[in-house]
Length: 75
Image (cartoon, rainbow, N blue to C red; front, side, top):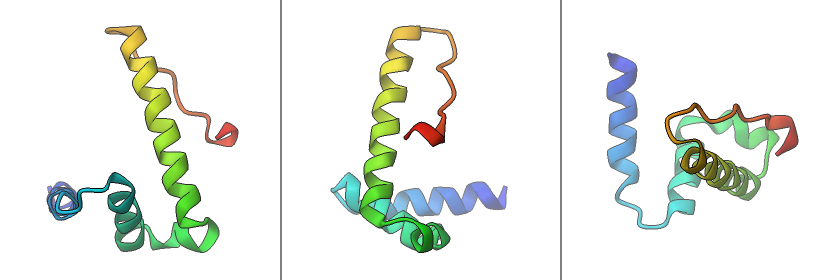
């Protein structure tokens, strides 16, 4: 329950920013700072958007079937 409350709070806080790229960057800096020690922030934002677009397309085409898993090694 506490985890859900934290995620909800983060979600509502991030909604204040109109730019999706900015929201992703802020979330990474606030909640997953460790990723920024290994990866460039713009790389993470671009990767997240690329995977999101692929998953959305897969979801549109599969109907009620589950979308394939993401192979992060190919991103």
